[in-house]
Length: 169
Image 1 (cartoon, one colour):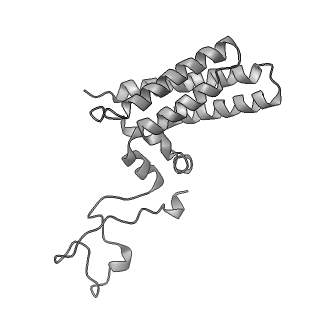
Image 2 (tube, one colour):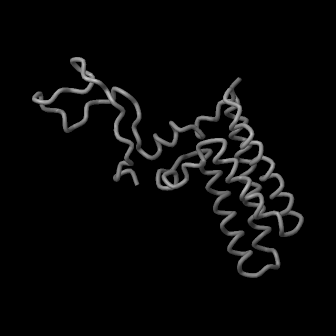
């Protein structure tokens, strides 16, 4: 059973509650620290929503935790916990975010449940520019016939180096 759409809808709902909780935290009577905290929760909510439609390389490079149930679950649980203190709307939003965070942490241990395509390691590697496919096109440094080609003539084939492409950022 493909649960990809279900997980995407859940992530969008959680993102909406992050934004609602962030706005409620900004409006709470706690001064400047609450305002700043609310702004960060709003930014993370927007980032979570954007990740459901597009994976920008510049953000993806620094948010690799969003590509697993465990990482996303801990992220949701943390954001849910920091929005719990500031009034009814923020409290309700925080509880909802926290519950989905704990659910994702539990789902991490069920290996038969597949994460949606935008939460898999392959999506992260594609967005950042990593290449882990074996038998990719030959490296430009081995174009000369004087050098053995990878995978040709009994030569072993190794995955390409996992370095980000500097031009991708």
